[in-house]
Length: 379
Image 1 (cartoon, rainbow, N blue to C red):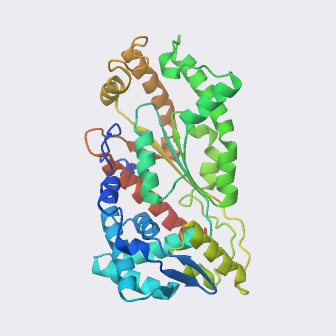
Image 2: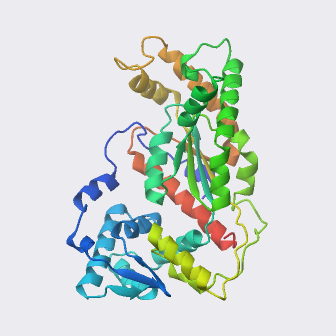
Image 3: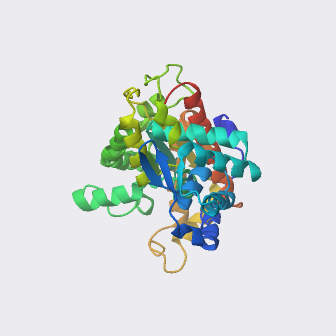
C-alpha cells in the first residue's frame, strides 16, 4: 500500500479520552480459574509457562481483534487444562491453537502472519517506528494505541526528552515553542530545528540500543524532524531497498518453536533451546526496519483542538498566549514537515471519527512493511 493510499481519510479522534477497546475487554476477562493452573510448553529440554495474556498479545500483533484474541487465548488454556495436558510440546500447542483459530474464523492468512511475526521476533529484528507531526495532531494517542496492538512497550516521547534536557543543561527554553513570540516564520523554524537537534542527540542511546539489541521502539512527538533521520530511514525501508541485507541462511530447528514464547520465561527458554542447537548458524547483524509516519491536521480542526487542549479555563498558558498564534506556529511547523511527505507515510488526521480507525491503518502499514522485509529475506 502506498503512502497516498494510507492517506485516505479514515482518521481518528486523537483527543479522545475514552477507554480503548482493549481496556474494556481486559476488564471483562481480567481473571479466570484456568489462570491458576500452570501449563508448561517444552522447547527441547527447556520450557516456559503458557501465559493467556502473552498469547492474546501475540494474536493481536497478527491483526486478530483484541476481543477475539482474548477469547482464543482463554479457549486454548481451557482446552489444555480440561484435557489434562499440562506438559506439552510447542508443536502440539500450535496444533491446538491453530484449530481454535480456524474455529473462530481466523484461518490460513492469520496463521501465516503469526509464523512471520514469530520469525521476526526470533531473529531479533530491530524495529523503529517514528510518529512525527506538529502539535495537537494526535501523536501520543496513536502511538499508545499502536504500541498496544503491536505489543510494543517501549514508547519514547520527545516532550519528555526535551524536558529532561532543559532541566539538565538549561540550554533550552522552559517555555514551549508554541507559547513564545517570534518575529517571523523563519525564526520559528530555526528554533524548532535547534530543539529537534538537541532532542535527537538525547535519544541517540535509545535508538542505538534498539538497533544493536534487536529491540522494538516507537518514537513520537513534536520534536521529530525527519531530516535528522534521513539515513536511517533510507537504510531501514524494505520497500525501497533492492539490496538484500546479509543474514544467516539457516533458521535452525529452534526457530520454528517459539511462536508463543514472547514473555521473559519464553524468551529465555527459546534462547536456551537455540543455544543448545548444534546445527544452528550464528546470526549476522540485522539492519533495523524503520517505519516513519507523519500525522497532519487541517487548520480548522487544529483551531478546535488547540482551544480544547490549551485554552479551557484553568489550562496552563491560557492566560498568556494567543490561540490564533499557537495554531499559526503549529501550522508553520506542519508545512515544514510536509516537505518530507515523499519519504514518510503521510497520515491526514480526521478528528471526527474514532481514533481506532486511524490506528488500524497504521497497524496495516507496519505489517505490510514487515511482510515486505520477510519476503526479501531481510530477517
